[in-house]
Image (cartoon, rainbow, N blue to C red; front, side, top):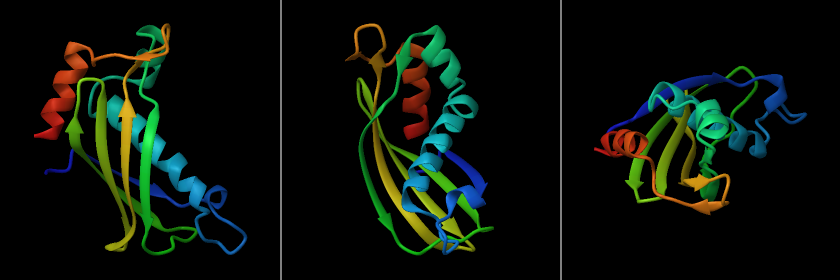
Length: 137
C-alpha cells in the first residue's frame, strides 16, 4: 500500500499537558486536521465544499490508536496517511505518526459518507469515489 498523503505538524504548547508531552486527545484533533487537509489537497474536495455546498459529511465512526512513544513540545510530527479500504459509503485509513524517525502513534480510522439532510450514509459521489479508489491503489 502506498502513502496517499504526507504532512508535518509541529507540536505546540496548545497540544501539551503540564509535563510538555502531547495530551492524547490532541492527537485526535491533529488526525482530523490531517484528514481535512488530505481531502482538500489530495482529493480536491475541501471540507467547506463537502459540508456547506454538497451537504455531505465524513464523520469518524471508528478509531483505533496505539501510542508508541511520547511526543514533546517542539517535535515535528510526520503524518503518513494510507487508504486501506474504500467501501460504497465508507473509507478506512491508516495514519502513522513519527518524529525523528521514531514511531509515535499508529491509528486506523473509518469514516462514513453521509448526507447531512437525511443524516444517513450514502455512496460516495462519482468524482470523490473515483479519487478515493485511486488513492487506495
